[in-house]
Amino acid sequence: MASLLPPFFLLLLLLPLPLASSSSYPYGNVSLHIDCGSATDYTDSFNTTWLSDRFFTGGSPSVVSEPLLFRFPPEKNLRSFPPLSSGKKNCYVLPALPSGRYYLRTFTAYDDYDGRSHSPSFDTSVQGTLVFSWRSPWPEKVARRGAYSDLLAFVLDRQAEICFYSIATDSPVIGSLSLIQVDRLSYDAASIGERFILVNYGRLDCGSEQWGPGFTNDTDYFGRSWQSDHDFRSPDSKNNVLVISTRSTISGANQQPNFFPMKLYQTAIMTREGPLDYELEVDAKMDYLLWLHFAEIDSKVSGAGQRVFDVVVNGENLTRVDIYKEVGRFAAHDWHYILKNLSDTTLSVRLEPVVGVPSISGLENYALVPVDLSTDPEQVVAMRALKDSLGVPERMGWNGDPCAPTSWDAWEGVTCHPNKDKTSLIIYQIDLGSQGLKGYISDQINLLSNLEFKLKFFTGYSSIWTWGKCSCAIGFIRQSVHWLNTRQSCFFRYATCAIE
Image (cartoon, rainbow, N blue to C red; front, top):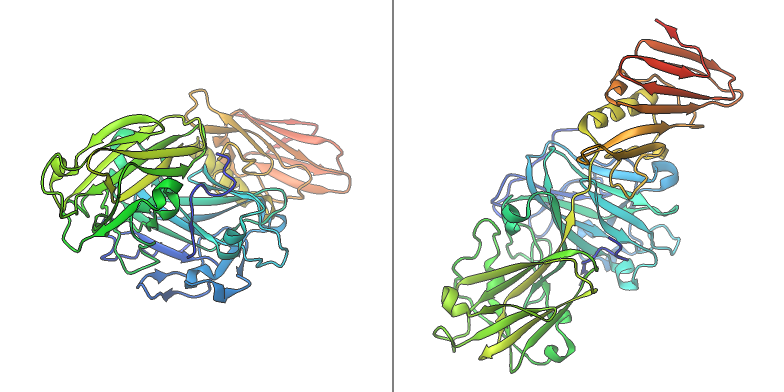
């Protein structure tokens, strides 16, 4: 993915994991909100409990330069990760999570907090998969006021990893993150599977202003926020719509597995005449999951066949909709479709009238991002043990998955490649030359098969390294020392190994 910014954003208009249960989130028992950079816990005006900053691997707290410009408390604090001191890769690692699907929302702002007048370039990954790319310079409004980004991802290993990777010498930055457990069958997961992350490229309420948890007191059981559709209508459609609304109960809302909120269906727009068009910005060469939401709330429609329209996406007529025929009045009706390998950077949605004029309540568009390969779990254990035994400093950025995402140089000095089955990543070389490390080689390095391990020493440096039953005293050597792990023996080149 090569977006200049997170592909969709909402502009502002280890201790046991504390699990926050709330009547607003009926599925599962995880509702976690972290104010990054904050030193205290607090409850906001929407009755959301925000935790002080925790579960980070490094970095430093800060505050936006003009706090009064930011409406909500979690938007005023920041955590940044300077690469020279914290390394290229840093993470939030949220432990002890139930296996399942999660909704993740982050807030990111710059606001010249560091006085450099340079919004940073960096990437963000979730569960080892690249999901957002920020590139300098950010649009001025985003840099000053910040942006929200969100997605849906599966957590299968009981911990969520949200990682940041510095581009050049820029410092990644984050303002807040929220993680909420949702129904694992939501958004057609039974068909799509668990190997995709759904990245939000547009979640629109037709006819309403922005609303949802964190912005208003309205309820969405997934914690989703909904943005006004106004700016996404085509120029011809913006002045050709009527907004209709109702306070009546909408049957079929707030139901498993998607828990689409009732408020979504209580407003709608319809054209005065002719078609209704939306234009959504996307990244080319990706697949997208499109959801459309309808409810017949117009008192003038009292039977089937009185409002009929076609759904045309990128010029292809995909389905014909008669809301009343499908569900009657004041009832939720949803339709979704997967678009494969889009060739353009605009996704067009047209509601073409057949009888009467078209009407719609909401629209969602998600990029289907394939989950990247991750490091073999045994090798992760070995590498974390090696990190501890060698005392690898923060500046080397040994955080999160040692090999993922595959587009990053994830851990400095570590080289990986896919295994024979291409089901995971394995480590085949570690080069820690000139790092000045002192310590011992953990026995768990035997979990790394076919590993070439290099340590470079230069004149004037002396150290003793121990690996399993082999030890090697090294002093004033201008050569490289290589270990080749064959699980049964230690092979040393340019040095003498004494068996203990």
